Image 1 (cartoon, rainbow, N blue to C red):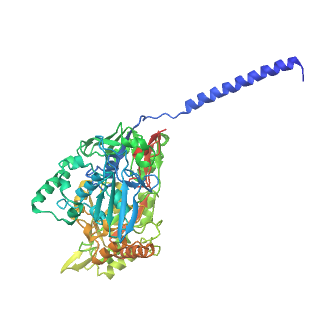
Image 2 (image 1 turned 90 degrees about the vertical axis):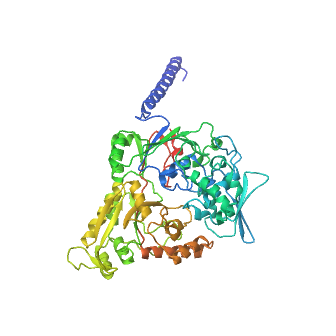
Length: 590
C-alpha cells in the first residue's frame, strides 16, 4: 500500500506505541518500587533471643547449645559440619586430612591454610593445635567431657619444613578419630593461653599419661587455674579467637554482643561454606528465659531471631498478620530430641520394671499435639531412623496405664494402707511410690510433667513436681538429686559415639550420664563400637546397644521437635538442621 497518508498515520501510531510502552515500563517500575517491602526493623545488626543464659566460653567446657553458638562464631575449628549441608568441611585446614596406614599405625596428615591468622596478625600454626590438645590433657586440670574423644592420639609431629603442616598418628582404632581431631574443640592461640611457653616443656604423650615430675606440677597447676579463671571463660578481652566475630560485651543474664572484624583473614574465602559466611555486622544475644516476657518483646518486634520458642507461642505468633509479614517462621526437621532422664540410682527407679512403667505413663501423641502443637515426631532411642544401624525391630512405647500398673504390681508394689498411693518395703522400710520430677523454666517441660503426673496418680504413683531455673536445674543434675527430669539433646549427622552420654566414666558431677547408667559390660560394648571399622558387625553392635537401652529404660525418649526458629524477613538464609538450628553468619540482607 503506497498511500502517503497511510504511511504518515502508521508513523504516528508507531510513535504512540513506543510512547505507550515506555509509559507502561515506567509505570510498572514505579509500581514495583512501591511494592518493595518496608520493615519496622532495619539494618544489618541482628538481635537474637535465646531462652537461657550461656554458661562459659572456656573452649573445653562449653558444650551447651547456646554457649557453643557463641564459641563457634568467635573461634574456629580445624574442620566441622557445615551448618547448611551437614557435611564435614575444612575451616582452618586447607583440605581434609590425608589418611594412610602402615604397620597398623594410622596417620592423619593436615595443613593449615596459609592465609589463616590470629587477630594480632601472627600465623595460626600446628603448634597452636598441639598446645590446644596439651591444655585439654593437662593432668592437673579437671577432666573435660571432650577428653575421651582424643585419647587415641599417640603421636603429634609438626613438619620441620612447614610449621603449618602436622601429622597425628595412632595405632588405636576409633571410628570417629578424624571427626574428633577436627572438631572436638576450637584451636587456641598459644601466645595467649600459654603466654609463658609452659607447655613447651612437656610432650603431649607425657601429659596424656600423667607422667609429670613433682617439681613441674605446680607449674601446670598455675596454668590450669588461669585457664579456668574468668579471664578465659568470660572476659571479652581474652576469649576471642580466629573467627569472624569478636566478643565485645557480656553482661550475664542480659546481653552478649559480637562485632564483625574489619580485616578478618577468612574474607578471602567468603561463601566457601557456612563457616566463611559472616554477613551481619553485629549480633546481640539476649537471654530471656521468662516466656511471657519473651513473647511480649517479640510482639513488639524487639528481636530479629528467636530460637526454641514454645510451640504454642510459635504457632500463635505465626498467625499474627503483622508479624507474619515481617518474619519467616521456620519449622525444619531438626537433629534434636526431647527426653526424660530416669535416675537409676534412685531407690525406687533402680528397678527397671518401675522405669518401664514410667515410660508407659507418657501420652506421647497427646504431648506432641497439645504441648508442641503437632510440631514433632515420635522417636524411640538415640539413633535416628535415617541411619543404617537404626533398630527397626524396637517398637514405639505406647501410652498404657494398665500396662504400667501391671509392671508395678509385678515389681511388688501395692496399696497396703489404702491411701491411694502404692507402697513397698525397701531396705526394711515401707516406702511410698513417690518420685521427684524436676522441671526447668520452659512451659513445655512443665506441661509434659503435668501430663505425666495426671496419668501416674491415676494408678497410685505420687509425683512431686519441682520447678528450677537453669542454674538450679544444673545444680541438681550435678548432685544427681532427682528421680525424673526432662532435657534436650542433639544427634550427630555422622557415626555415633555414645560414651559421652552412657559410659560410666561420664557419670561425674559435670558429666552427661545423668541417669547413672551402665556397667562394665555396657562400657565394653560402647568401646567395641568405636573401635570397629567393619560396617556390618558395627551396625549389629549399635542395634544391640539400642536394645539394651530399650530394656533398661534409663531414658524415656519423648519426641524430636521441629526447629521452631523465627528469622526476620529482611534476611535470606539463617536456618540450620543442626542444634540450635541457626546459622547466624549466613543471614544476608536481601
